[in-house]
Image (cartoon, rainbow, N blue to C red; front, side):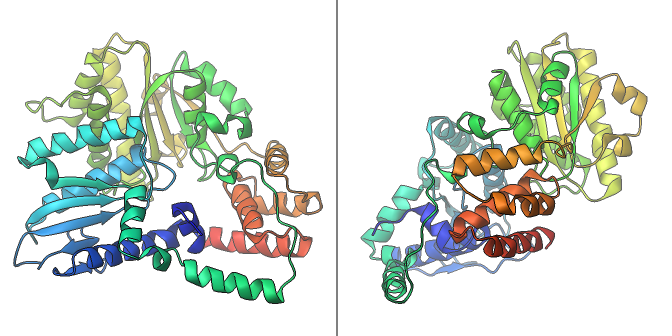
Length: 437
């Protein structure tokens, strides 16, 4: 029996469970690989120095830090931001001296992702005057090879347990008809849009409005979490073949507006392969200078996942973003460069100078799913091959016009491998409880 990291996630229920188990698996692997050294995880708490696992005697000698990131489906802007933040925390820690830094992930990265990794790695090696072996990446295939080499594969992937459970199950439980799915459910029930998801994307009036508006103005998208703002942006820019720089703020700890501006600056530096002017201390001006120097004819700067609960902080961020767009517009003649900002908050509630903002932005609300959610249900159920029409009204009512909740219900049904109305009713209740919690 061979298993991969997708199976590993299923064994542990969800991404959260798999993430914790992945770190345990990496500790087990490195402990057996380095039996002569102390190998340990570090209990998570604020100020832990950016350590998941370390090799060596902490406080006595330089240590190797193992950073475990369960990046299974994506290795985009969000994941890259997390890598930068983790490495910076480790290299700048005053609690220990860093001997080497190893990133462990369960996926194999593609050519564009490799390009980003090696550019970032060598930039950091140069910045800190380190040898090439100081930063390493161990991907999913390498981890499986190591687990097999160290005779840990069956233990980590629970092969023996599964064989025993299957044997007992087959002996006492009659077989049931499995749900047959010709297409990978992850492709159908996507969270992050790519071209392969187009067949399962439901185009709405908002999509048409977005494309028309972007030709003449910057855009401020807003709407509740799970309404599909990020998918809308990725889909329409991809379909229009418009180059874009995606500034994903989801992994960023935001305590003030400057945290947001710095993250935008870092993303823009990487996208355009340009460095900020260190003589200029104003971050807004640093960002604007790089954008003014870019050679791209048409590009969109996307500022996504701007979710902040503190009202004063979100208002200050909105004010600074308006200043950024205003300053760039005053300094540049590049009409082809546009900004797209995405927030949960309604911009009318957080923008102080509304008249100034209206000179530069058009607003699009993404909450309008009431007349589309039933059509999305049909697309998903037909694509997966689920005969659940009897439970359709319950599922639609419970999804509360949220595509995220609807897809989560479908994931539960697929996992259960049972489409009886009673089972679906229980799964719907469980999904809503998990969403609320």
